[in-house]
Structures are given as structure tokens and as C-alpha cells.
Amino acid sequence: MKETLQYLFEGNKLTTDQAEEIQVKIGKDQFSEAEISSFLTVFLMRPITAGELKGFRNGLLKLAVKVDLSAFNTIDVCGTGGDEKNTFNISTLTAFVLAGAGIKVAKHGNYGVSSSCGSSNLLEYFGYKFSNSEPKLKTEIDKAGIAFLHAPLFHPAMKYVAPVRRSLKLKTFYNKLGPMVNPSKPQNQLVGVYNLQVLDLYKKVYAGSDTKYTIIHALDGYDEVSLTGEIAYASNGKEGKLAPADFGFAPLKPAELFGGNTVKEAAEIFLNVLERKATPAQEKAVLANTALGVKTVYPEKNLEESLEIATDSLKSGKALEKFQKLIALQ
Image (cartoon, rainbow, N blue to C red; front, top):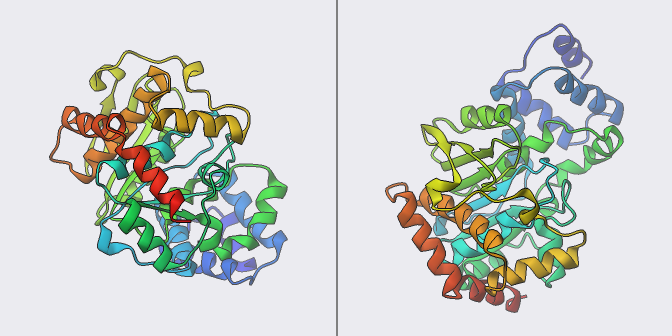
């Protein structure tokens, strides 16, 4: 690590292969916490490159617990977090509405960081049993259309980084990696990011890959379609902006997306959406995100068609059925 740190302190950048090699060594406990801390600090003092981020992603995936769900042509719906907006669990709800629409979902998630309730907190509250067993996950996708991959069970290498991240109490490049390291390597991804710089990074990392992707950032700071204003997006070579009116909705107020202060409150909002007892604002936010998920898998469909598919899944009760089925399988 000494040579690498000296190389970086001189202003040099890592190649993708060098970044991957360092990440693998970190994951194999070959460096001290002080060395890892110094290494992470480099990327707090200057922007990480797309090549470096890709290398760190490749290293984490190389060390991850392997699970093959490729037969299902899955989508993941995941945000980087870090937007500090404490919205309700929009991406998790989107995953179930996509499942209700017949799209297979491999949802990667973790406990909340920038909100009081992450996807893992929520599903654990309802009795979902985290597992990295491939047969269990395959059964869930086959019967419920969705399986949940709790990140810590698939990325044991991260345990060597966790104490350093806790001590630093700062966003590191690992905050950017979460949606990129779904161990099942889904063929489709709807990813929300917390600023335009990260959107640009993601766009470069995903360019030329076989993944169908849509990367989004709400220009007022959300890592999802908030409908509080315009979003920027990048999707397989296409880029642009979308306003709430493009979804047929009026702009929402930030307060309408509040996710509660406890897991219990977040769970109540979650169930209210699936049971059609939510506020119009909560429902619209979920439908807008789901529409982009549908369009990611079926890029030939326009936004209106995608929204109709999302709306049918939620209003017909199919999304609720998928949730109930997944929990019943535990």
C-alpha cells in the first residue's frame, strides 16, 4: 500500500485494473485500518475517475458471494442514498409494483443511512428472512416475482472497510458503489444518484455494457424521481430531462414525500401505498419511478405506456399480491 499511496499523493490516477487489484487486497484483509483510511482520504480530496470506480466495482463483485439469477432477466431498483431527504421507501415500493407488472426483480439493498428506514429495515420489519441461498432467491423470484439481496450477506469483504467508514463519518466512494455491486448482476437497472457528478460517473461506467440502464437524479437533490421538479437522466446512450408534467402530474411538495421518523411509520406508509390507502402524492411518486423501470426493461415503450403498466399493477392489487406472496414464502 505504501507505494500506491505515494503514487496517488503525487497526483496520479489508478487504472481500472489497479483499482480492482487494490480492492481485492482490501477485501482479503491485506491492509491495516490506517492504510485503508489514508487510501480513502485520497478520493475525498480529489474526484474519483470512472475507471477507478469501475475497478473498485469489479473488485467487490469478484469477492462477492455468487448468485446466478440470469435466467429471470431481472431488474434492480436501487439508489445510492446519501441525498439526506428521508423520503418514504419509493424504490422498494417501485420494486413490488414492477413485480406486479410481471417484471422479475432482484432488489439489492441495505439498512438505512440517509433515512430512518432503508429497504432492509423495512423488509426485516415485515418478517423477510435475509439469505444468500441461491435456491431460496430463485424460488422467491419464481413464485413472487421478486427476491431481496441484503448487501452485507453478499459482500463479506466490506467488513474490513466498515470500521474505517464509521470512524471517518464522511461519504467515501463506497457510497457511490452500492447500486453497482448487486451480486446477481441484473440485466436491467434503474439507478438513482445523489448529484450530477455521480450521474456522469455512472454513465461512463455503464457505457458499452450489456446492461439496460436508466440513471436518474432529481435536480433538487433526490436520488429518485421525486416529482418535486425536473430530473436528469441517462439511459443507454440517451440523455435528457423530464419534468413532472411529462408523467402527467403536477409538481409535488417535498413534505409530501416524508418517510416517517421510525421503521414502524415507514412500514405504515409502505403498506398504505400497496393497499391503495396512500396520499395521491405518495402514489404518483411510486408510479413515476415504476414507469421508468418499465421503460428500462422495455425501451421501445413510451412513457405513457410504461405509466399505464405501472398504474395497472398498483391499482389492480397485483403489486400487493407480490408482496404478500414474498412474505408468505419466509
